[in-house]
Length: 210
Ligand SMILES: [Zn+2]
Image 1 (cartoon, protein in one colour):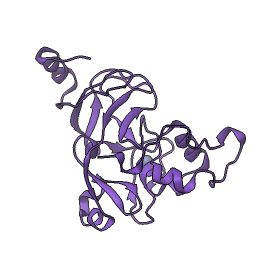
Image 2 (spheres, helix red, strand yellow; image 1 turned 30 degrees about the vertical axis):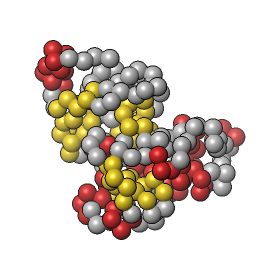
Image 3 (spheres, rainbow, N blue to C red; image 1 turned 120 degrees about the horizontal axis):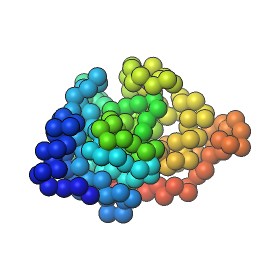
Image 4 (cartoon, rainbow, N blue to C red; image 1 turned 30 degrees about the horizontal axis):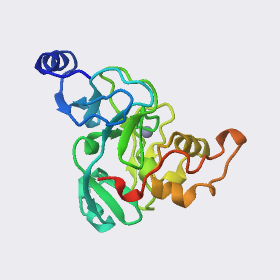
């Protein structure tokens, strides 16, 4: 893992933004521990400080646990509240609250709160995950202009995603446990290729985020 002031200066010069060190994964693949926060098209975003390999653990989301009512009361910052169960949310601290959404994301969020790479990620690339992989509330939606070829235009609950997308996220272990517990096995499958794999992705308890 890169560390130290000299490397920090070099990154700042080449990538811009603010260096944001976080505790590296204890059992991650690459030990990525420094990220860059800088403004972009969708406000502040979190960027990789170096190349990241597919499957690598990046950092863990943290925050105070709040109720649905408390999440709604956050108003314009409602998107900072990550749903981890029915009527249970995490009011995300940085970096987690700064990670933007994409309909074709390069990262996923496990139920233990760890963000991980869904594919190889280049140095400087913005990290994004699909907010719908956490949402099962029949309430919050947000217009989306993420720029992805398959942009859904509106961010909605997981159950509204196309079947192939749901299955892919399930297989990757990038869906929160409260959603897996509610829908896994009951989602319609279009083919054997998209058959859902339940309980094989090491999902932790829904209360383990935070
Ligand atoms: Zn989109």
